[in-house]
Image (cartoon, rainbow, N blue to C red; front, top):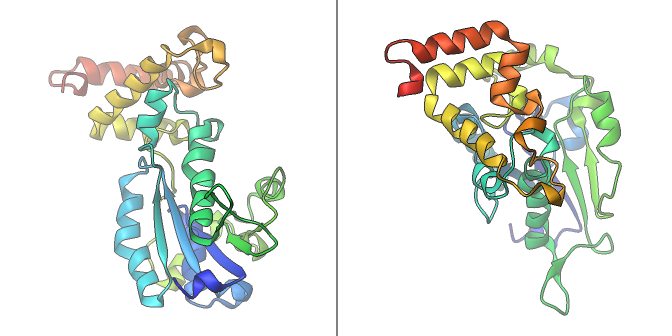
Length: 282
């Protein structure tokens, strides 16, 4: 790491923990010729909301981290100083809203990674705070967007990006998308991990709901508690993810979303609750 601090241009791999970045990282480690421009990685970072699916943490522990150790590439596992995503949402009366939740998309991911950059590569100003500038450093951030996400790739460099930061999407550049992943992992002789998402994200869909309700009833209760707690928020502050119950859209409510969009699921849920020894009574 000491030699890394002396470099003026640093290649950082932003690992999301899912199949996109896992495939990309393995292809780079195996020196895949389609990704020749990205073979040299100085650092891998993983911003952990502390609410990922367990299989994500298992894959990191059993496959990704050992591979990085063999390649002698530094790995930083980042945690928010104020605690996990669930605890911070509860404290702010917020609900799970995927990328619409600033604690998920910004605070738990982007801001945490940039704070790491300042800590590692920043220079102290007169107030003792570290800062970064394109005048003395360039960080090339390698991202996992694939060829099936053209709009996301088009937008990810827009907005107020720091001048010191350049971002790239090698999977997109190589024309690789989800439909190619099984074949690519088979060639690599590596198991394909699941997609990375928080345990309770609205993007889970019906199958994810069923899995949690059936196998992890305590997690379901925690998510409902989060939803109920959001109703106690101070709506006058205009928090987009603190919404009174009568305004809470079904997409962001475990109760309303399942009932309105999946009648058969609601019936199944009621049967499970009312059955002798059902999970609602566990």
